[in-house]
Length: 427
Image (cartoon, rainbow, N blue to C red):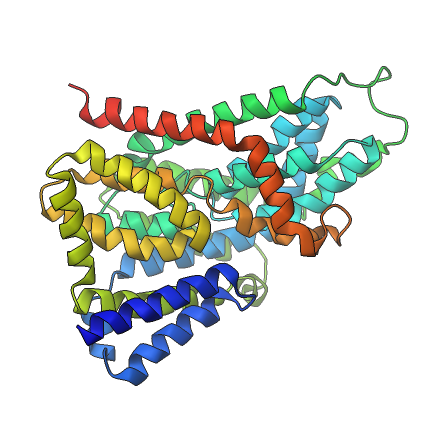
């Protein structure tokens, strides 16, 4: 009983610090892990025994990190956002929509934060040139990045962990989960168009105060060979993932193969590419895994799963609703990855208790759809040099925009509930 109380205490303090402290999440999680080691409640052997992390996860997240780094150096982010500007024909509603589409696409390739950091200086400059308010587009792009971060089974550390642990292939994820997320994006983008639209393009087409030379997307490309090779390898990798069941290769093998081909075909220093890979994510994951080991060892996950089973009986649909609601609230407050290490073991135990697997895992992914937006909002003051959002007022800014979007968030979560019911439980 003492070990259980101690585990809960360390876990709750860790989550509170992740939510409120300015310390990096990796430092907080690793500190919590060290506390468990020092207390001797868990050992290194326990971590190996109860590990959620497997080799597929390590290979996949490493391969996607390399691919994201190559994408950053290629200029594809700047190219696509400038192309989106030209296609908008300087219409405010179309401009916001196109930017959100580009952010969604890029975020789906393990690039949600990179997309925000690299694209927003360009977006802010464009909106300033057009003398257009940026706030609504900021929120739209951040929500698009958050959606993109769970759009595919390779889109982020959370979904990679879920997919590798639950043996959900790329094509299964694409079939069961991605369609619901695309509908949510369509709902949100339609609302954003209505909310920000209504302004026609200027009478003369391109505004006089905008230099068209600065919006020449071809200038963003680092090199035609680099860009074309990157796109070709990305498309080939995605195609292979779609046919992985036929080829007999695992998703992780296909992804690391694509990453290796980038090194072989693109003349870019490996040191330059690998330098862009953030090691703090690996330390964060390791810290969370150590904490999760204590929850496994002292049967805390089993107690949570048992309470849910006794409360809901064997009703899988009610379990899905519970996961969507609780997962959304907790992921919003404490982060998607930390909640993945809480929900994933509980869901796996619920599956062993007779609950259907895919609806539960899908529901948890849906619950994280908008949870990363406030985290990425912290990057905006750094990127825009406090010109649009003061760093001290980031959370105030977010909550004001959240109140404006709360209705559409509610509609999106209603859609998730309906999708789960008709997709998995309706006979």
